[in-house]
Image 1: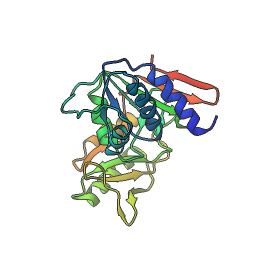
Image 2: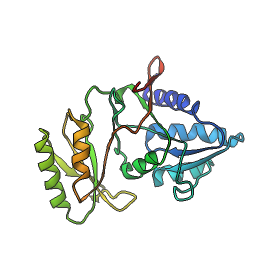
Image 3: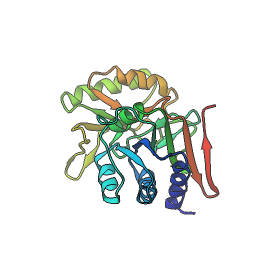
Length: 231
């Protein structure tokens, strides 16, 4: 089973948790896109769903495939969000935002009664941090914000390059018009403490640590899909 087949297996297992009539948050990324394709097939057969996309990229794919969409303002309370992750640990803490949609992903997940993560085995880690931690910041005062992040990281015993994400010839801009700093910490032994500290920095719009948000992770490997929970 190759990487894409594993993502499809995770998406298939997640789709079993979606009921007709649900208000559904729809995530961003390659695994989430496999879920969108499967969801579109069900919608075409009469399955009722109202989807809220977490990015413009996801919205375009949903519209292209015929998945009915609403805005989060139209549906401010959701039943379920299904989204991917760049890393997931044994406590279902996540690093997300490799695609740059972390702010909208976190807003949508927070508006949902439940969040299910779908991923392949390569995303499961003992300690978060091998994947660069995305930190979304306001362009104003970006150098001061980066320095504040570096000082905060140092107090927590973290080190590594923190660089502005680029795209083409310039800086990557999120759907909300912000910049992304990618922090190469390697290991984040206390992700909970880092999340609190980053939230206290004024120039930080949001960060890619998703703490106590996912209730389940569906992990696909060569032998099929398995489920991780915190209980």
